Amino acid sequence: GQQLNQSPQSMFIQEGEDVSMNCTSSSIFNTWLWYKQDPGEGPVLLIALYKAGELTSNGRLTAQFGITRKDSFLNISASIPSDVGIYFCAGQTYSGGSNYKLTFGKGTLLTVNP
Amino acid sequence: GAGVSQSPRYKVTKRGQDVALRCDPISGHVSLYWYRQALGQGPEFLTYFNYEAQQDKSGLPNDRFSAERPEGSISTLTIQRTEQRDSAMYRCASSLTSTVGTGGYEQYFGPGTRLTVT
Image (cartoon, rainbow over all chains, first blue to last red):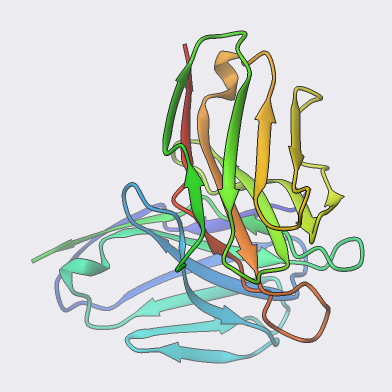
C-alpha cells in the first residue's frame, strides 16, 4: 500500500526560529494536507493543497505541493510556544469513484523552548 | 454543533467483550471515515461511508470489525470479541462532500475514543 515518509521525526527549537518538515511518497497523491495534533485531541487541519506546485500560506504556515505530486513540505516561521504538537502530513487519493481516504505520515513532534 | 463528536472518549473492556464506538459527524457532512491510530503513528484508514452506504471497508483488520451508518448521519464502529491488539485510539472524520472536483472534501476529525482491552 501507499506509505508516506515524514521527516524529521522530532524537532527541538527555540522560540522565534523557523521550522521545516517534509513528506515524500512513492505514489502520487491528488491532494496533500497538513494536520496538527495536540495531546488528547484529534488532528486539526492546517493547510490543504490541491495542485502540483501549489504554494499556500495560512498565517505563519506555508506549505507546498511538490511538482511530482509525491512530496510536500510545511514551514512554520517565527515559532511560538503554542506551536508545540505533532504535525502530520496526509496524502489523499480518489479511490473507487469518490473515496477520499487519507494516508498519513508518522508525524513530526515539535517542541518549542521559550 | 461544532465539530465531530465521538463517544465514549475512553473505553476499557475485557478481552472477549464486544464494544460499540459512536461518531456524530458535522451536521450536513456527507462522508464519514473511521481511522485507527496507534501510539506514535498517524491514523490508518479503516472504512468509509457516503451517506448511509459503506463504500470501502478495505482497512478493517478482520471480520470482528464492522461499521454502520443507517440514516446517513451517526455511525457506529463495532468490535466483537475484543482482543488486546485492538487497543488503540479510534478516530472518526467527516467531510462535506465526496464528489470529485467540487472541493469540500477536506476531512475534519473528532477527538477519538481511546480503547483499552485488558
